[in-house]
Image (tube, rainbow, N blue to C red):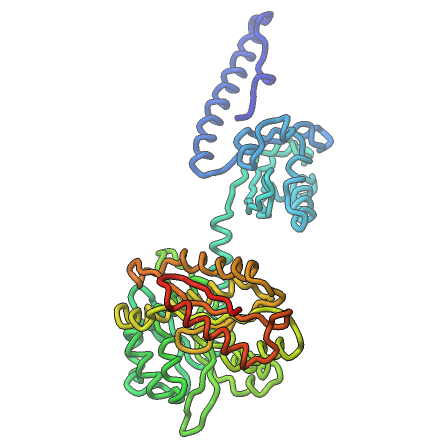
Length: 472
């Protein structure tokens, strides 16, 4: 609250009319003090923080008072930490906004300005560097000659509201962009497991062409679409890729989930792509916008050919290299005289996992193991899926059992820590076989190297739990 102590009149030596006037003035000041105290209670409710400025007859700032509430909002403890100077405030303003805010401030208090309200939003930094969005509003009182007399201001932290507005604007632009670029656009309600039509253009899957109905159950809608439209060789994998649980899992990891596939139009094969994006809603429910479009023209471009090359090298389910590309890279390491170790991983009793918990749980287990392998081996090494429940990896420049075991143990620790709810507490165990190449006792032929590592897998299978054997 603004301190009125310096404004009160000393009545000790006053008499008569002077005393009466001084007492009346002091009473008004105390009334002002009580009103300001009430106003600051309102400020607290609103989350606003007051500040005050006085000006001399020439329009220059003569005093500046930052309330303790204002200082604390920005993480400062007191006047020693945040002096009663305009520069204290200016220093907190983000550099990109500083010139604009200071310009508006000076224009507002200038005597030639008709505007008596200082009103601006900007970015500011707290003492610890955290970025906040601030809305400052101040009212300028003027002298008869137009020069400013005082300014009473409020600063409100509007970070949450601003970020929400930015997100909503961004999401609106996303919907607009999808509506322009995609033939078919849907709003997906994950908890309700429904798909609502935003835009339909071109071929509509059989049984869902009634434009008077805008919302359908998600699963049968997808199943019908895949059956009617998707190229037969892509139907099984697209069923998994479009499964609602899979969509939610992918959007929990990334803001955007995209996948390319082949569709059939009038007997001709075309390239298509779906894009799923999560939308933030005030209700807190998961809403997802989904768009489907023809990408034949993009596929024809050089950039898309590169993307398709990556797709052709990648195992769709797990995101590792597929067997063809992984073996190609591993073979090149051996043929080029590099040193390292080839590892083969076989998940134990994996058929029982599928039979007991279902293929969806099995898929999640494979994805989790692949993720653990990539994390344990790092980006510099090669991880690929051989097929089914088997994986392989090449660790470069590791040529002895001690370092090799450290790496395999790191992977074992990763999968021991996996928590897959669909497995109801069951753990995944892996049998591993390792053979070295390029060192003093290393193999120089890829086929022989693979046989040696595979032989060690069978030895590991004889031991319950995670186990690794090295070819010697």
